[in-house]
Amino acid sequence: MARLKDRQKAIALRLEGKSYSEIKNIIGVTKGTLSYWLKDYPLSEERIRELRDLNPRRIERYRETRRRNKEKILNRTYRNEKRLIFPLSKRDLFIAGLFLYWGEGGKTKEAELILSNTNPAMIKFFVSWSEKCLGVDREKLKIKLHLYKDMDIKKEFDFWSRELKINKSQFVKPYIKNSNKSNITYKNGFG
Image (cartoon, rainbow, N blue to C red; front, side, top):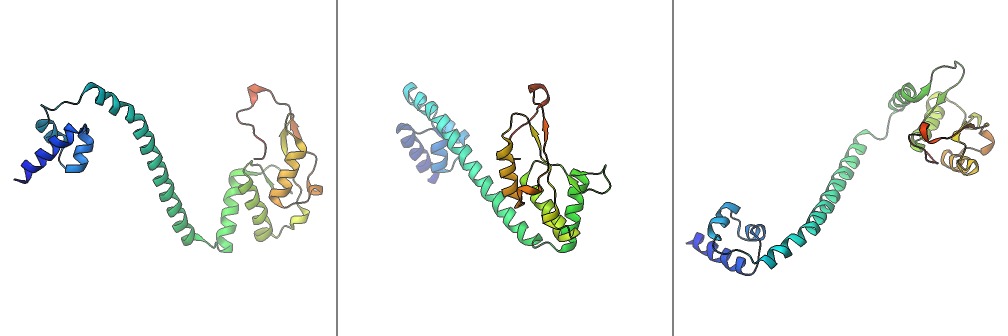
């Protein structure tokens, strides 16, 4: 008896111009069952065109919903993991800095502590690590920027001075590279 009511409801919805997906969501039966029940109730060509036209909008709404949900999950995971690992102990901080230096640090000059990276967060961490773990005085740091000839050098100095909270007098003469399209894979000011 319940099946008969579902079939009658499916037919009524189909006559209203609903798609199989819409009817399936309302009644809760498989598309195969709907196909059997509704084989004698096709949609008009006009309604089929309307449903097709709705499809790109539905896809875009679906993509946006998925993106927002993914972002929520990532943010929640980040917050949970952050609570587990922070605050870092001095030992953890020291090890993190060693790994950063191992991957990005200069190892050719014995008396210098060098880090080459364009990510402001990495450079800030390195400066903080140098102070907290190695006892380096921030005011004694010297910063050398590697820039391209067509970059605004003053803006670069302003940016890095502000980001690192380091006086401009601590910046040494920058290395300026001639830029040509063949040797630049990615070039952008400020990191």
